Amino acid sequence: MIYNKVFILSFIVVGTLLLASCSACNSSKTITKDSQESSTIMSYTQISPEFDADSAFLFTKQQVEFGPRVPNSAAHKACGDFLVSKLKQYGAEVIEQKATLKTYDGISLDARNIIGVYNPDTEKRILLFAHWDTRPFADQDKDKTMRTQPILGANDGGSGVGVLLEVARQLNETSIDIGIDIIFFDAEDWGQPNYETNYVQGDWYCLGSQFWAENPHIPNYRANFGILLDMVGAKDATFYKEGYSVQYASNRTEKIWDVASQLGYGSFFINKKGGYITDDHVPVNQLHRAPSVNIIHTSEDSSHGFGEFWHTHNDDMSVIDRSTLKAVGQTVMEVLFTEK
Image (tube, rainbow, N blue to C red; front, side, top):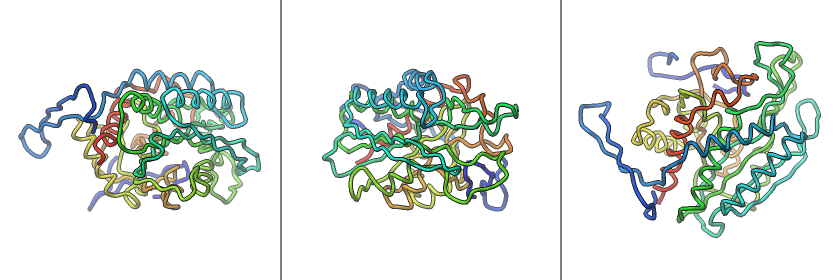
């Protein structure tokens, strides 16, 4: 399945449709659980530092407090400055990539990709990314009079950035031997709203990542792999193995889901294939900047395949849950710190 922020659920199951490592750490945690395959007790020792879900929650809240982070707005500029200052505070070498990008309706956006680099001289690199802008239209809102208004985007935008800011804070406190690049992509969410009847042909979502993939901050940039976080903070979120992730980064997808299971987060990271989702990882994959995996919340309980609050004014801090932030953040941290 391919979608441009309009999700048509197509999880595939054989024969049926789906209804739907850090040696410097001061401490480690052993997770003991019952195997799903047998009654054998399995034990896994966590290598990574402890991910602080309260901190990730706060980082998400701080973004939301700026208001909708729509390009060309005062809130967008203020939040961008905040993200730059946080990455610098947490020891990253910060690069701001600015560009004027055109929307489906001809508006010129002053877009700003924000890049935090750790261990810049290290050859082996891992790319972590999320989008930091928010949807300028609440086109899924039940109140039709509110559909042209921008959303707060606590989950859709804020949560992925919140998790990565906490990862950045941890990287500043605990050394790691590999290079890490954190990118907050801009202008991801200006795709044409579904209430407009005249469809404009083109790739109108993911404008910031498209620009970066064609014009990376370092010529000929390549990372060993990448992880995209999109909508990773809602209560009881479920993350299926997204189609493009399996296509371009099958081994990495399997490792992430396996790590999540070993850490005890199998109820979030569902061991089944999901649909193909057009998102920031697609241009990154297609232009071979990094074989990238998309960790994205999808739902069987809505007509569009996401949470009921998606692209509505209900996407506020009330939907954000620390347990989900913890599951995603700890999984990402464990993948990083067990990488050889």
